[in-house]
Length: 223
Figure 1 (cartoon, rainbow, N blue to C red):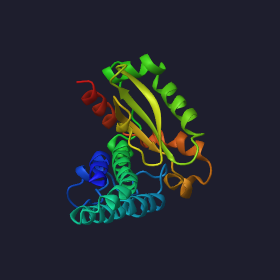
Figure 2 (figure 1 turned 180 degrees about the horizontal axis):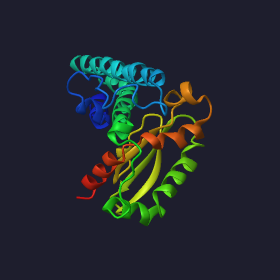
Figure 3 (figure 1 turned 90 degrees about the horizontal axis):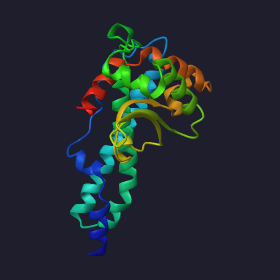
């Protein structure tokens, strides 16, 4: 009985959110269209290998969890929760990241107007888009281990902010934060193109950032 109560209290959002088999989502651009910023060679590994692995592992873990619950083995189900959280987070974070990027033909790198609502908020927080990028890069480059850099809208302070998450934690686990932009700081996101020069990766990634999508996310967050 105690195990059942513990499991129900610790049941994470992933197993509730993924009620059916998870599939690798289609990329919103051609895999070679982000070159030279991100090569098709790197993205093949990042998307078709790394992201696919998160999806495969998540499906396997959710199946194991379901079988354990059917047997009443709540101890096993509870022990699977951290792994489901990790691989589920990897799937969610990567899916968000792909839509944070865009090819040049899709407007990648084109910044919104400074006079728009989003542009005004950027100016209020950082002074300019250039300052936002400098701050983001300065704070993300030394991130230890693996994780993500984010620009978020903080519903508590009603302002834009920079923050980080580690491993595959979800930004939505931080109360009141709505994700607008994320950059993958795991080595698999840049190493095949940039080797150990993480700052170069950060300097170049803005050439393919989908600012139109980020502005849409901001408008939705502030409705």
